[in-house]
Length: 147
Image 1 (tube, rainbow, N blue to C red):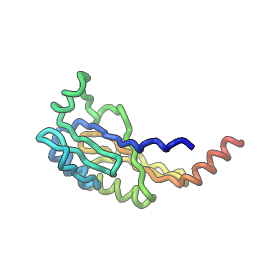
Image 2 (image 1 turned 45 degrees about the vertical axis):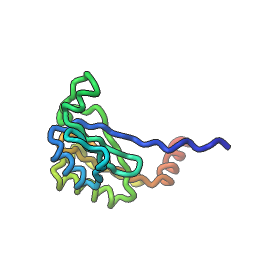
Image 3 (image 1 turned 90 degrees about the vertical axis):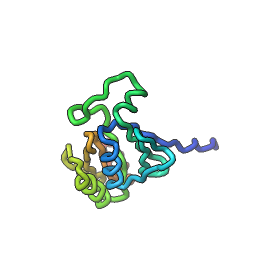
């Protein structure tokens, strides 16, 4: 049997206009500051042992790419999705984001076996917060394939 692949981590780099406000927002949603990876123009926020968000001022972000930083309030380049352990946890996370100044850009989605809501952070980056009953989702998919 082949060895399991080494678990990977993801680092999401986000340009932010106000670093201090972005840090406060992400802490309100449940992220934890990583004091080892921060400076006057950046702050790593950990959502789990494997998921990290690097908040970068526009100036710092621009040092990594020559591409223009779009206004995320007007355009969407990515939708970031994160799982929760229950429907109730989806609501809790989304409500924390809204209370911290985020907005809810999309209506909630309820497919029975999957439930999701979304929020946009202070800079307009959209996060999809989802819960899924994997067994029910697979059963639904198998029924659709068999039909």
